[in-house]
Image 1 (cartoon, rainbow, N blue to C red):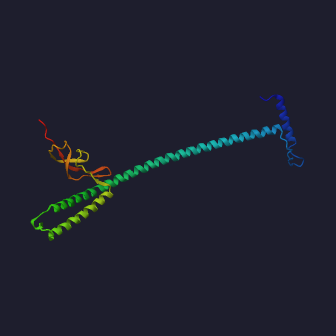
Image 2 (cartoon, rainbow, N blue to C red; image 1 turned 90 degrees about the horizontal axis):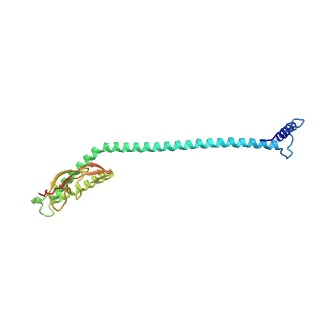
Image 3 (spheres, rainbow, N blue to C red; image 1 turned 120 degrees about the horizontal axis):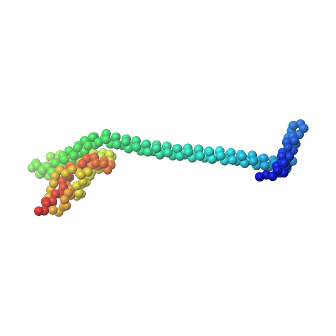
Length: 221
């Protein structure tokens, strides 16, 4: 605590300061270059209060900025999550709408491939002569069918559709359907021996199951 004598001295100095603060015509006197103790304490106290006030304002501004940044970050995360969800929904709806048309294209491809295979194995007596007119005609039709198949395969590729290739693999009920069985001792049970109808994936999802022939060994008695 400040002692009584010092207090009286400061009060007297303050009174003297007030009495001599102005000249007779009301104009302030020029500073003498000396700073009395009371003035120093007064200015220090004012400076301390000002610093405290500014520090409080800076802290409030920082807290507000931090809350604003946190809010923006949370809103950005929510927006990104919502955007991703809507894109997934859009892709699912688009694939659902495209599925019937793509299945029809696969059926068309099956018929074209079956026709091509039939022509390749067609061997009537009239076609035995090399270079015959009918042979050239059939060869031209086969070439046309092959061009059509390549174009269809290119279209399917653009839609991320790929064949399953199940032959030699174990029967998988998620991607295959058994349409026939054969008995071969050189293969394990449930191994796919042939593909009766091609299966396809679209972006890792089954678009059409493959119909396959699997190996079924005779049970040992």
